[in-house]
Image (cartoon, rainbow, N blue to C red):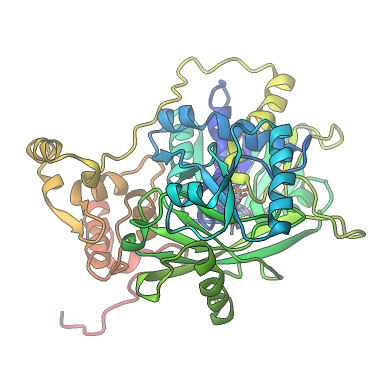
Length: 485
Ligand SMILES: Cc1cc2nc3c(=O)[nH]c(=O)nc-3n(C[C@H](O)[C@H](O)[C@H](O)COP(=O)(O)OP(=O)(O)OC[C@H]3O[C@@H](n4cnc5c(N)ncnc54)[C@H](O)[C@@H]3O)c2cc1C
């Protein structure tokens, strides 16, 4: 049985952030994840906004962590070598009620510590982005955009390089309290640890119950998206959100991605299915209608793909009220930290939440600092981001930079090789996609997916039938159709 000081359950953005913050200390820690990679839950199914924090009730953990997470992010992005742009955001309105709500949430934002928000007229809105809908807007300069998969990968890689071990395909099925530690049973064997931190996202209520806390009620608010081609991205400089409703919720918005696409969505409706990620004609039609109000270039010719994510919100079953993030450590369940209901803005709040979780462990264990901790992690050097001179030099040093494997996104063989040999040991096609963007372009892998599969086979010395797309059991090939080839 593998023995650790701390076990973190879940390798989404929150679990990966906890792992990274914990690796500042001299502890033997492990992350247990049921899927084959990090960011397989809602951490890869969201808008990728670094929220500023103007819609969250002052004094809540959400408000506190959002503002803290937002304002530190330039430094975080630098340390983890991830792409990030502080684009600002326009929250647009059309009528008097929208203006009332903009003023209301401007005041909330100011209370929370959000900087520089201003109400702007149509002329100023058009100057910021002529493709934005709306008669006026609130401009929020603190908002930014990032790639949530790259961010989660970077946090996990940095944790791993600082000594945390990751176990994939290891679903936690039961937790028992033995004399002074926890026995954690998984589909890949048993682990023991003095501390357990619950970061299981949508399944956090079940893990919470395994630890002796309540199985907190949560409700799933599903949202569907369109991903638009980079041709649409040329028209949009800044995220365009509609004025929030009275409770601070947003309907469909248009957001440029850090790589130059545009996301239109999400809408929001209640779902029962934990992993109900199907997209539906009814909701996509709604996105087209609402998206056009935010982004004047929402055209069918730009549509390349759709996806959905689900915000699992904790709520009060008696009143129906949506509750704050929960981060608790009850002495009666010794040496546990329980995080439940980490819905939006969980990406923005991941590191602040992680610091609070780790502080609880560090104070009770009086942990020593990890003398080898390095907050900086090197990302994969991207061919598409190089100047012509840099490209020439990169190819001279490593000829694999001269072979483009994904033609839509200009991803070279050198990048795919670095992704295959990633520090976390992830070997799925989606894992390569999330690390390099190969298969994310207009042709959606039509050209490069089989080439990437072949490279995985060759580099790892495995058979074609062993390569998985993203999930356990999701094989790229199931066998030969002709025995003579
Ligand atoms: C539509 C949508 C839009 C959003 N937009 C934004 C945004 O723009 N900005 C922002 O800041 N936030 C946004 N969010 C919120 C953000 O995506 C989430 O808050 C965040 O990803 C939650 O991270 P997590 O690590 O808690 O959960 P997850 O990413 O779901 O990770 C939990 C992990 O635990 C694993 N797990 C579960 N059960 C077990 C088990 N029994 N054993 C082992 N592993 C287990 C899962 O496989 C998963 O990998 C959005 C969310 C949605 C759905």
